[in-house]
Length: 162
Image (cartoon, rainbow, N blue to C red; front, side):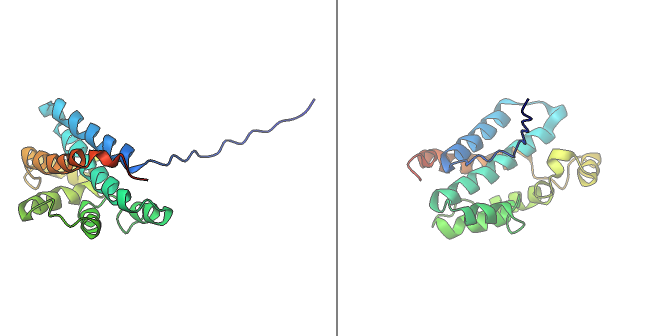
């Protein structure tokens, strides 16, 4: 009898800019269709994740190299919406977000970049206890996310890239 040893490996999926843009759109639409005031943190998370994936799919539509993917995942960018937008601006000569949008993104970024919206960290609990005063209004974040989503729609989710 032969002994066969199977050693599973980590799977790697190469998400294309198109796939990431579609996921961004899906997150935006999911948040728009989910309105439950008892779970408002989910909406904040979905809109923020939609912005992040939208920015990153846009960047990768211009440079889908392994080094760029690693850079976007590294601590240089990670889940930081402000840093992702700064990187986006290097590739696109558009003012996607105005100064008020950037203020809104900055308010939520404090929580999003550290995964606080996913894992409900102490700073989130503290913010909930004071009525989410440090957070932007959800409607404001929705408008920022919509601008990102509209950019993806106008660029046909980068279907012709790579």
